[in-house]
Image 1 (cartoon, rainbow, N blue to C red):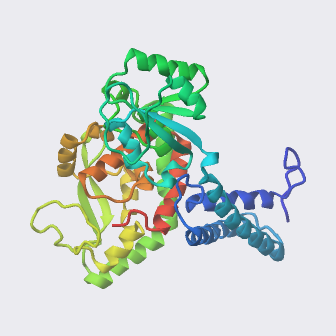
Image 2: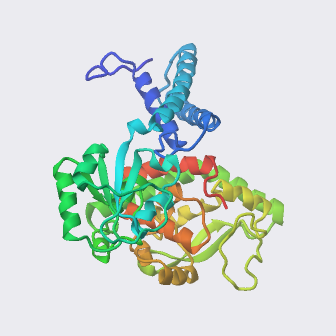
Length: 429
């Protein structure tokens, strides 16, 4: 039988068609085809499109066959799939090329030429990082020292408001190293009154890059970056989401975990250690034992020295290399989630000795411990695996964005997008 909604905007439209479109969108989002900073070429888009359709068809098979027992004609289904695949591929390629044209982007003027302004040129160098905007130039404010930059530094002779009008500027990003002078404030207010959007550097990065710059955010501003809810209905919803996601992940992956355990024994011998536990820092700085499938030799730290894992680490076993790339080694942390030591979504927990070192070197690093650590998170989607202080600084900036903008919808989006991390090995170490 076919399902047809009898009322509403879809009256008379097959429910299977609506579900088909929704599941295809789910698959495309899961593999990063909707990522705002996707940098793939045609070959990469093709690979992601194929992956998205594999995911979508697996989901549709469960929905149509197991749940709804739909009698959707197979020929119709195949034709719809072929048409959708071609349309998706063409749409993604054409859409990406259109968005890369400067004429469709916001024209941005950076007000500042010092250290703060250089954050844009240093961390947003690629065209994919500037998907929504183009930098027209950098304008100095008074006697501010100029840091050498690859960007165009302009010195307009006319008032700022007049220059902005002539250059057709859409947005001004204020990036000053020192306090703003009265003259600068008046010039920017005039631009704002003329309809030009004026934003601070920290707000600009939050919107365009999905992170909060720890080197330029003030302590007073940090007070408004709230932690996740700890009481009331919001806390219950968050905990309910964690339990539901953990149980669902276990139901889907227990065969994979069983195969992993057998593979570890086959490589290292029956009786070899399968699970590995390690002390990590969690909520409020309290430690707990984090569980993983063992992916390194059992004597990996026989000398007692704590080390970050590195690329092509010689301590990693053959099975370990595979389960690390696919993130299978993290699956036992479902137990930590169900026990309430971790959340499903949150910052990755670090070892106490690393936390002590990083807290002394990175501003606001302790803020990570105002929430439960997670199996996956916003930082894992946006930054590859790293093993340095600078990598930890970058990941903290994404974690702070998550704290400030947290919602169950964002949690769900992170869960779906984590599929891309697994399929394409993003951040594998």
